[in-house]
Length: 149
Image (cartoon, rainbow, N blue to C red):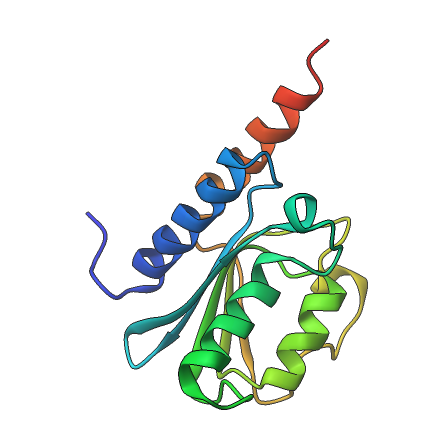
């Protein structure tokens, strides 16, 4: 059983967002922004639907949370995302200044940690591997289905 309001619990909420993307035939990545144990922003990939390469889950969730707060910075917030953010999203998160970024599956090909150091704000804590198997399995299933003849 997952403890309520734990990193795993919030990552499960991000996975629910990823399933929304999956159901829309989008790459299944989901994100939630948390402030004081409350989800204040949600997002999932919408790049195909919006014809917008910047419509990643993190970008959607940052906008949602900023609108909720009425402020551009996410100070004191934690961002939970099912896949390690890409450099573009890491850059946006750097400007948003969350307290923490917690991600599920690593992205060795496009993830910001494997491509370059220093992409997020120096005070932002970063942790990966939360529900890694569940997050990675959803992505693997999505791409395996698309590669079938």
